Image (cartoon, rainbow, N blue to C red; front, side, top):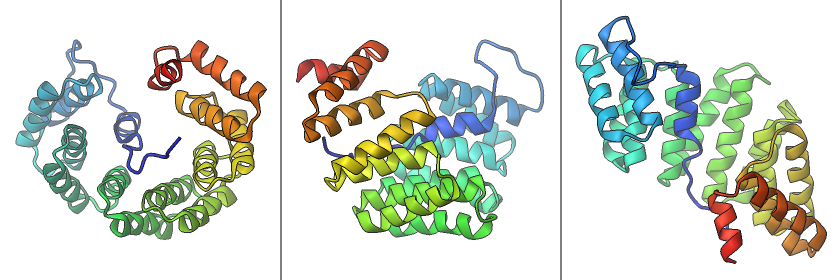
Length: 250
């Protein structure tokens, strides 16, 4: 298994989780028009209905162009559609409007790393570390994101340094544990990858990605029993996942 050089890092999921927009397109919200259209735009974005989401987010900005949350949301939409030029413009506008808008800073940092602007992306994450209290959730997440960015270079030594700093802050941090398992696998250190993945699964429920990683770790270690166990769980828990289809076709 090769580690993907560039992934979306869950930008859309982060946007939706932190935006806390609970409106669905079928509901009739109330409030100021900029906020209402933002909520509807995010709801359509969540459904993958990009055209109508774009219409709602553009309408939100027509009411309030200096709305950093709407600027961030439309940047995510453009990023999802592959329009990197427009995405970058709107991320930058969101941050210029509110330099302390951490969600936009994180999304923009991830965007930069995905588009191979590694130094700029890492610098944004390290700026968060410098600005936030040592050991805070924000600093922990920033170190993880810096590690992911360094992995994409790839610069495994620097990536491991960032991830270990994250684990010093939160030894049981699931995201850092998973990324360390990925990193160890990429380096060919399969025993260490197994250990980090097992720690990850002790902290949170498995995902298709984590079970697929387990299959590949155990295949390289030659442990047929554990490989079959990961295979069984992947096929039973996530039968329609990309990873399960890949397994069935192999």
